[in-house]
Amino acid sequence: MTENDHDTDTLVGEWMTIKDVARALNTSPNRVKQYIADHKLLGVRRKGELCVPAAFIAGDDIVKGLPGTLTVLADAGFSTDEALQWMFTPDDTLPGAPIQALTENRGTEVRRRAQAMAL
Image (cartoon, rainbow, N blue to C red; front, top):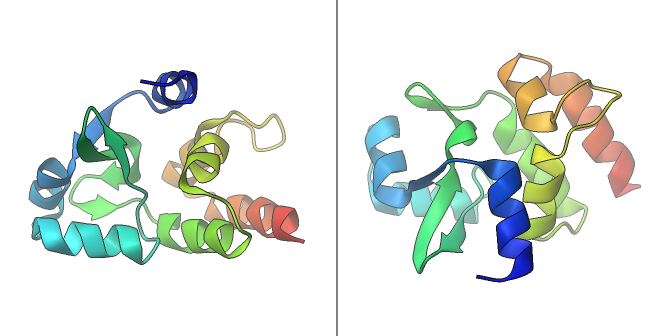
């Protein structure tokens, strides 16, 4: 595990395997992998297994506003690691981390900040 992996793990906290995400979303692991490819979710390898931050899943769905935000970040050239860092790093102007703001239904503010960084 690299230092960057450790930093990301500290920020993200809990991870879910692709199978766990598929169960939570009542879909197939292949569909979850497609969500990752389509920037609806972010997936990274942890201990050899593809995982998704647990904070990206709310009940039986993807957190509202997350896919649009991840698309904006991808279009801005953010790598997966950079997007994860941004999503989980507290921002005093929100307040809280962008993922926290999304779970609190403040997606417009989050996307505004993401779009501003893309300029």
